[in-house]
Structure formats: C-alpha cells, structure tokens
Amino acid sequence: MEPTRDYPLFGGAFSATLPPGAIDVSDLRPVPDNQEVFCHRVTDQSLIVELLELQAHVQGEEAARYHFEDVGGVQEARVVQVEAVQPLLLENLALRGCCQEAWILSGKQQVAKENQQVAKYVTLYQALLRLPQYQTDFLLTFNQPPPENRSSLGPENLSLPPWSLGDFEQLVTSLTLHDPNIFGPQ
Image (cartoon, rainbow, N blue to C red):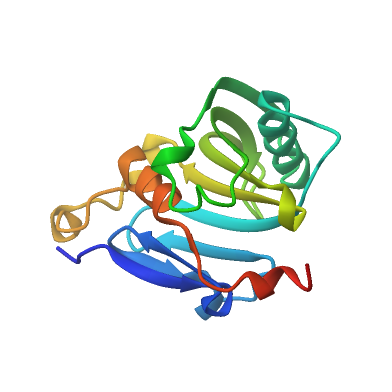
C-alpha cells in the first residue's frame, strides 16, 4: 500500500500529511488559488483545503455552522443538515501556535453532481481552524460519497481502501505553516 506523505500546499507555504491514493486535482482541472483539492484514486471521496477570509461576525460553533452552510449554498445543496459540532483540542494541531480556535463538524448535504439530475446525500466532515492574526479561516473538508458510489471497489482495487475519518484527522492535525508571507504583510 502507498504510504501517507507530507505534501506541500499553496506553493509550499503549508504542508500536510495526505492519505494514500490522493491525486492532486489541479493536475486534472483548474482549481481556485485559495484551494487545494485532492481526490481518491478509486472512490469518489475528496479532500479540500481552503484559505478563506476570516468571518469575524460569527464565533465558536456558529462559525463552523456558517462555513458548512456556505459550502452547501455554493454547491446548491437541496438539504444542508448539521449532525454534530465539537471543539478540536489546539494542542493536537501542528498549527497550535497561530490557531485561536478549531472546530470539527459532521453533516450531510443533498447535492447533484455536475450534469446529473439526481441529488444524493453526501456526508461531509469539516475542520475549521481560525487564524485571526492572519484574518484567515482555514477550512478543511472531507467529502464522503454514499456507499453505492463505491461500486468500483473490485478485487483489483482492494490494495487502496477508502479514506477514513482517521485519514482526515491526520490531514487536519499535520497541517503546518512554513511561510507566513502567504498572508501578505502583517
């Protein structure tokens, strides 16, 4: 099995540990400059790392809900349902020195993929890391497709299992800042 690996993000300003089988979507199609997007080699799972403007008008758990609902709006989700929001322990984060608060949210959104009429429920896990000194909200999203979308997991693909919540947690906790100049002059 392919090992996890530290991967440079945003031109090397950050790095994080990616799970096995992660494909950089920017090698396949354009990705906005404020995002890094990775897809699983076999499943429909994806990981999105986004640098967003700090939403100072929302605090605590409400900030996590705000970003989840915002993603649902962008994806034109028909249903946006938060299941749980919990604080993340800052001492577990590589970004603990500059992260003021951190939240993990789980929920479901009913969305239709591009060029498809049928909307399916997708489970999302989001981690929100708030960096107010850089006026930044760091949003990490793990998209978990419905089980029927995993039909491609035949015997030839068993060497690369689907990503787990543990893989996402490793991405979140390993996220490391190398160059604060990415945020501009402070």
